[in-house]
Each structure stands twice: as structure tokens, then as C-alpha cells.
Length: 265
Image (cartoon, rainbow, N blue to C red):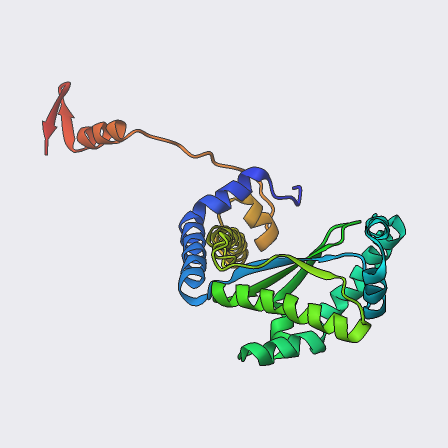
């Protein structure tokens, strides 16, 4: 016989273990929902945006004050080379924003109960290609705290850049607000429930086939050949008899026929 499992046999296994599959799947789905709702703390996020524009130092500022209004207008014309330089500076600035010099100062100023590593993992920096805008996104269990941290990071970074690099090229475009309609970022109840359902179903089907493999019950000729090693020389088909026919046979067998008539015993 061919040593393969047909699709019909797979369906038969799943049908025999249907109660187990349903129970395990529902249990995993319910457990994921309970854990997500009662045991996982919600996380909120808030963001602020900063703009990296043309840089000026103190000497340039004094020189610009002495220029005429015409010269000032000419100086305010956007220089493509300067824009390109600012874009290249963003890579450096994204490293500085998440550096201990900035993060630890924010922790100290706001008296946060967090380490540098903890806060650093909750900060995300988003940049767009060929853009001078950097978005600072902060996650926290408290939406107001998330907004305060994001705003303070932007302020501290603006001050530290001026001190470290002697430039003043950072402007804060939009400040973070606890009123931002972000809602709870995590946990995602629907996603977690769907993951629990999929994992529960997968484990239930795997358990069903494992139990089927370990079950020594002989159910068909395939089991006789491969489990017992006994060749099959014949096959007796199943004879299906209706209940009405069985009842009629029982009635006939309970009486004695005499002279063409049936007498009850």
C-alpha cells in the first residue's frame, strides 16, 4: 500500500479530535484577551518636530547686524548648498538626541524614575529623505509624561547643540501635547487576540495529530498492515441494516409459525 496520508484521513483525524481543537483554540484566544486587558500596561506616544535650518554663530550675527537691509535680504536667500549641509547634519543630530548628554539631562531635569537605557528605548526619531525636519516620538504609560519628555528633549537638544557646536540652527516647529488624539498605542487587543487564536489553533491541530500518532487503536486495514505487519487477504464490507428491518426480524423470531400462522411464545 502507498505510504501516504490522504486528505480524507487528515479530515477524519481532525473530526475525531474536534472537541480538543475547539477547546484549545478558545482557551488560547481567551487567555490572550485576558492578558492584554488586565496584565499589560497601556502605552501612549507623543511627538514634537524640530527644523534644522541655516546655521549662524555669534560672529556672523554681529556682522549681519551691520549689513544694510538690502544685504540682509540677499543673505536670507536660500542656499541649496547650505540646505544640503543641513540635511547631512541631521544624521549627526539624530545620534546626539539619543546620546547620554541629552537623555540623562532630561531625566535629571524632569526627575524621571528611569535609566538612560529605559528612556532611550522609548524614544524614536523619524526623518524624511531630503527633509530638514526631525520628529521626536516618545512612548510612556502616561500621555502627559510622554508630551513633557518629548518637549524637554527638543529644548535640551537645542541648548546643547548651541553649546557643543557653536551654532544656532535648531527651531522647534510643533510642540508635543497630551491632548493629541493618539490613544493607547499598546497593547493592541484585536491583534493580540488574533495571534492567540492562530497560535491556539496551530497548537491544537498539532496536539490532535500527536495524540493520533500515539493512539494504538486499530481503525482500518492500513493500521493492520503498517502497525501489525499482517497482510490483508480479504475484506468484509460493512452491512447496514435499518432499525425497522431489525425490529421486524426480532418480531418474527419471537413467534412460532404453525399452519402458516405465527403464534407468540
